[in-house]
Image 1 (cartoon, one colour):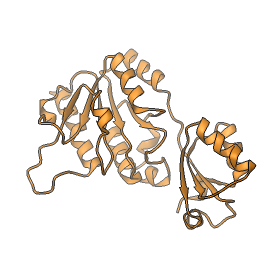
Image 2 (cartoon, helix red, strand yellow; image 1 turned 30 degrees about the vertical axis):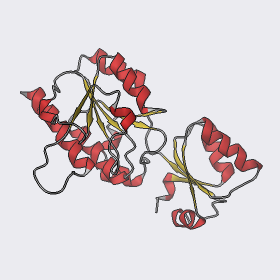
Image 3 (cartoon, helix red, strand yellow; image 1 turned 135 degrees about the vertical axis):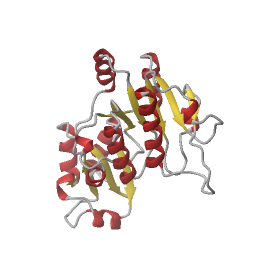
Image 4 (tube, helix red, strand yellow; image 1 turned 45 degrees about the horizontal axis):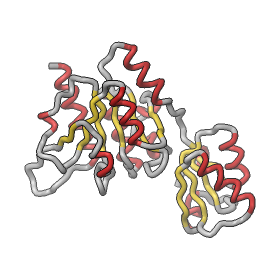
Amino acid sequence: MQNDNTQIFGIRAIIEAINSGLNVDKVFVQKGLRGELFNELDHLLRTNAISTSFVPPEKLNRLTKKNHQGVVALISPIEFHDLDTLVLSVIESGRVPKFLILDQLSDVRNFGAIIRTAECTGVDGIIIQKKGGAPVNADTVKTSAGAIFKMPICKVDHIKDAIYHLQSSGVQIVAATEKTENTLYDIDFTVPVAIVMGSEGKGVSPSILKIVDQQAKLPILGEIESLNVSVACGAFLYEMIRQRLS
């Protein structure tokens, strides 16, 4: 259950929250909900590309015991950064950019663990998509050990557009995927780079793999075919640090 200070419930309250510019991260809507007021909310959710899940009433009742009117919103505890502004500021700082792109990562604890590792390795920013990814909630904050308040996070409409923007800014895009013969030790991480990590079940999307600059995998010597995504991400980030410190 979410902490109440990360929630808003009730259709009108959520409409007002969105219109006031509050960071609404995800909205759970009871299946079959109808009515003029809901139509107004639905239009706002679509217009603002807010992640929405249609769920049975039992799910909403687990989120809150209060009168939710069929709608519960999760509020982000952080302010998101503008991607263009962040990329420009990193380049102008003289640092060699290092970004992390999360493609449809769904587990909030994996998300939090990745944020923690990214902060420890000096990542300049994490890029996530508005729809389909893990929400930024109390569990994310807890698992990140507070690193989420120190790490710039950008929410974009489409990961592809973010990749094109980074490429046009001179940033090499490297996808972590098992669908390649290259290992991460074959990659030059001393140049401006953004590492793409995929979802827990499907990995990096095929459409994303088509547009990245390079693909790399971790060598697996045991019988288990893959690592947890947060562990794999840590291996990639620390190989980048190893190269840059050499």
